[in-house]
Length: 80
Image 1 (cartoon, rainbow, N blue to C red):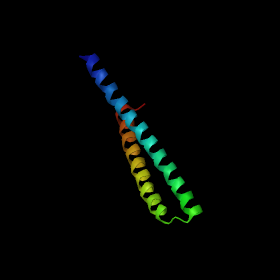
Image 2: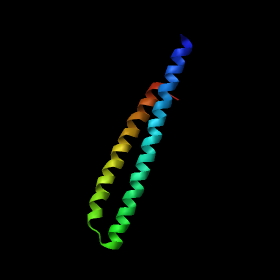
Image 3: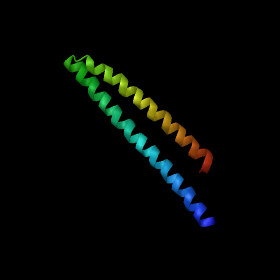
Image 4: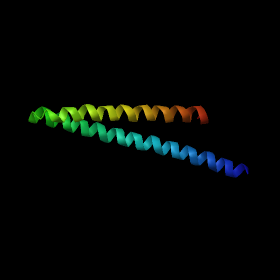
């Protein structure tokens, strides 16, 4: 019984770490896309791209909040 509980805890820990990793990748991708749109908008005077920059920025903020939530939860649960 002790072993299955240990496996369960490690599985949840791995899932949480995986979620953090996924959100960091998503945040980086959105940030890079926003930067690309910003540069294209400035250089090509494509004003419609600026709206997508703001939208992508909101997505980055949402990822950051989720990373903070999961990370804090990990710290409170496992106290590494």
